Amino acid sequence: MTEVSALLGPSPVAAALHARRSVRAFTDREVTPEQLEAILSPALRAPSGGNLQPWHIHVATGLALDRLRRHIQGEMAAGREEQAGHAVYPASLWDPYRTRRFENGEALYRTIAIDRADKPARLAQLAKNFQLFGAPVGLFFAIDRRMGASQWMDLGILMQSVMLAATDLGLATCPQAAWANWPESLSTLLGVPDEMVVVAGMALGYEDVDHPINTLRTPRQSFDEAVTIHRD
Picture 1 (cartoon, rainbow, N blue to C red):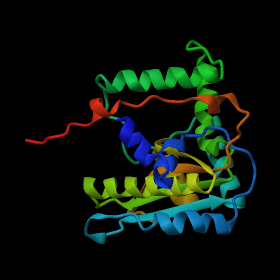
Picture 2: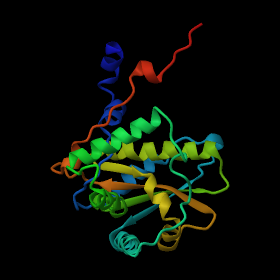
Picture 3: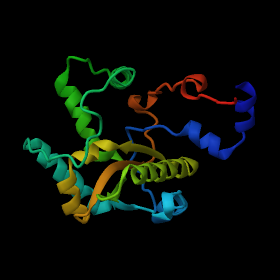
């Protein structure tokens, strides 16, 4: 694996893959329209089966993003919920996936010194998802409800392409499946048509490098754990 790492080291694609992280605290530094186009235009070259391109990206920034944030904050303060547009996880996870999710959550809360027993603090941190962690841009990825699993996979490829393009420009992102919990609000405030469902959101902006939550580094499986090579 040393030879492979050396081979990929100089590659800008490999560098972006290694540098990309889910950032959960952003500065208020503006992302310009030119930067948005420089990220989204090449990302839209992402492949899709049959070239269906079964996606649409809703971009919220400025006053539109402020309205969305205030609306969701008000809904949560009033204790209101919406029926999720889709299930983010299976109803009951099994190992090793259950353990990975648990350890990821515990590591995240340790960075900001929130104890496992401090439920109010954990809920307050969870609510920051719906403020996009202070990012100046929110991206919302939608797909036609009639599409199948293969097209959802295509949408995931598009999202990865957006994240790598952003990383290449020195910006940070955080993909957020949690936005699936607010389909009615997104439909109303962003004009998402009834036949479309928002699969995920994504915070986009400049990382707050001084915030402790951004010190989180999550582990990955080793090459040998994740990959089986069949030669014979």
